[in-house]
Image 1 (cartoon, one colour):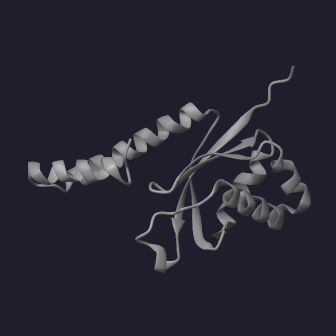
Image 2: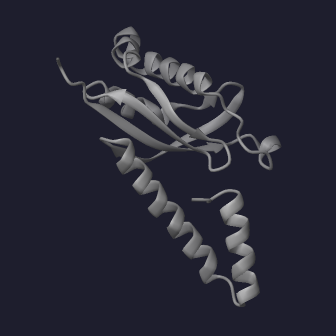
Amino acid sequence: MVRFKNRYFTTEIVPLDTGHTAQPLNLKTYEILRSVLDVTEQIHGEFGAAAIKNGLEVKYCNGSTQIAVIRCRHGPHRLLASSLPFLSNIGKRKVQLQSMYTGATMVKCFKFLKKFHQEKINEALKTCKTEKEKNKVLEVMSKTKYGL
């Protein structure tokens, strides 16, 4: 039996359309997959789309944190990595994909995300002057955007 290696792309999905900024992204995994395949086909042709299609999957997508983890097979992951910056639409939403981390396992990706969110919380706590403000920031961030 042959072991297939994978690569996991941790990306932040930044919405660019101004009308939906207050709303969280309600993206479906199949919309992300379709958009990724389309942009890869535009950049690398049918060969690129066929190479990444086998093993392509969105393993994690969180609309409130706007973070997605995309799995791709090792080897064709280079084609996917070169195509992701050109992704401009997911479904009917204008977005920009910012690559945050590329890892070999889901565990490493989630360790990176935990560290990333902890840094965001620490940055927000540094701006607080009173204990009441700190408690409010911790309550808001743990419920919504940067919850761990």
